[in-house]
Image (cartoon, rainbow, N blue to C red; front, side, top):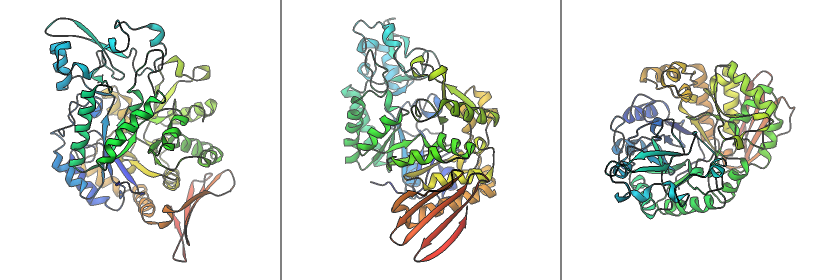
Length: 488
């Protein structure tokens, strides 16, 4: 497969200059040796909402962004990853529009989870609904069929509107399975080398359950997708916001997972100036992970860190971030809330702001991220040490937009010249080039207000030292018998 043990970028198609051609220009001008691990382009397909996550089709690129040829051009230099929303598709897709017109007479009727596929008479059972891990007030929407006037209720896990813009797909339907096979083939033909299975934890629905990360069925589903992608030489990365044990069971099956624990633990480490929780986490953590600090949503708290965090500490971390300008999203399901009603789902903030816009603290956090085993993934706003876009969040009513600023080419050029971004680029190049990162990792004993991480391969090594008290960091690099101290 194409995965490299080097730094990867994640960005929207239009967030670094406005379209794919501009993105390629930015990447080739500034970041060829920074993002040697490739670029994950968040959904570049025609979409009716949710910043691309309500796709109308996967067979085209949104014309405002460019074409498949533009994607292939980027892929000539950078390995490309894209998203496949295996759980849902847009209400305005041709598939669902045909269903809205013809109802059960539509050739696409079986694509969707009408409620009679969940309950035989199509009537929701309150006791079952009470157990569902909700992402909206109720997990279904009602529509009127144009030709018959009949009412149809279909499962809709996500969506702020009513009825929802995002219609859940029936992944058991042979027609849906064939559509996904065709989509993945199109991806492979156009140079895509990795696919993130977005919202895969929600694809399976069963009455009387949470309808979230059902075991073992979810593993069987992902394994089935992997059989297809392996044949196409595409890696997969399931996106699962679930407790750590579910993530680890995926990892033990040889599947890449996201490290959604690290973003919060890094804040805990930097805010409380102690390494004990970080070190404890690193003891038994699988290495086949994508290591993140920031992303297009928020910094995960619940349910990702259930069983990992102390809720009193989590409240203190959340309060610190709120003081620094963050906002939060909350858990809706009572069954998913913690003791005393703790309901923080995600902290919404740029990571630079979450660390108080302190360059040294920010570089220390990135250095630790780059030294933790796995593939480091850097969100584009984080790469440019971006600030909260509160204006955009207020205009759209979506707090996640605080961390989704669209940069002009001039803004990119200006950000790249700042000291903090220059230092981050040096750090990324070091992570890409040092041979020891293909060797053996260890945490090194040190005082609790310090972090010391080491990689060794033969006679080569690199050791990161972070003084959490003053947020100063340096690396001791040994290659070919030569020792060098690098100030982060």
